[in-house]
Amino acid sequence: MSDTLNLTLALLKKQSLTPNDAGCMDLMAEYLQERGFKIEWMNFGETRNMWARKGSEAPLFCFAGHTDVVPTGPLEEWSTPPFEPTIKDGLVYARGAADMKGSLAAMMTACDRFITEHSTHNGSISFLITSDEEGPAHDGTVKVIDTLNQRKEKIDFCIVGEPSSHKHFGDMVRVGRRGSINGYLTLFGKQGHVAYPELVDNPIHALAPILSKITAEKWDEGNEYFPPTSFQISNINAGTGVENVVPGQLNLVFNLRFSSELTPEDIKRRITYIVDQNSDNYELSWQVSGLPFLTEKGTLTNAVEQAIYELTGSTPVLSTGGGTSDGRFIAPSGAQLIELGPINETIHKVNECVRIDDLDTLSLTYSKILENILL
Image (cartoon, rainbow, N blue to C red; front, side):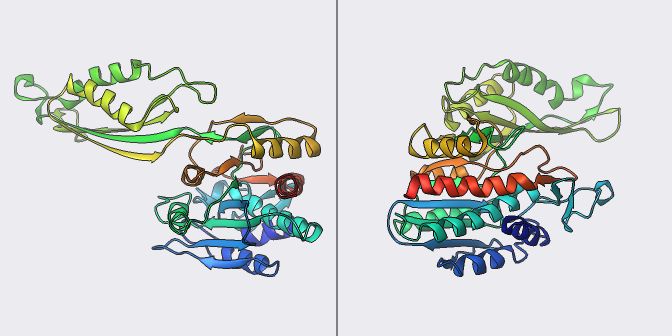
């Protein structure tokens, strides 16, 4: 059994539901301290954050990730207990196996291998680990980056261990992410009996033309790196639960995943204009979850492509698809950043799993990337 698999199993046994780290970082800190890393705890609120660094010279190469996992879902639907990692047919089954405790283990063993073989390498290596990536993410990576910025400690290259692979390991690498903005619209009407339309003002009816125009809106064409911006409704709520009452209020929640062709201000302005044309009694608020970011082809992407090709014989697709990640907090600081991890097919699902062979290949890939950057 490889060191990477042993570390993965040890992390998977810990029930680290957001924002509870459940001792995962203690395990990581002990491992890294034994290899010369200085550990610094940056805890905010209920969130635990670890900044570990070895060396003081530039360039600074950072491994970033999270120890927290999403809830298990119905336990009866799991084939094996989600926090009792089980090996079967070359796979490890457990919550967090792919997202992303396997990556954390691979990062550690990759560093061990690299440091052992190249004790006089250039630059420095660091780990930025949080216990709140799957949740609100208010006190996690973003706060650590704020602290590093304040003391002018700059990350030059960063790998986030998110499960980026699609069909087989290394076939896809994330080089950026779309922006994400949530809108919260409340339309106010006048409640009353459905049989007296002259006495009511139905907010559901008012929503119809608004939705028709917003869903027909062509936001942009996308560009070389990003697909076109998309609009999706995630929740509509109205009504009293009976069939003969017109509701007095409607609540709508929606999201746009937007390309670098738009800013949040562009989106707010265009949607507000549409709502204004169809209602004069509403409230609209916003939450920006992240701005688009992109690492264009250069030193880091070349190092990653070379390492993957050397170990797998294939060249990865450089993608900006998928949801948000903590990369959105790190990239704006100026770091070249990519996301590289195992296959993402089972993440957040019942019976989440990761291939054992992929864990070992991931560790070797991380080591090769370190060699390509720091030698």
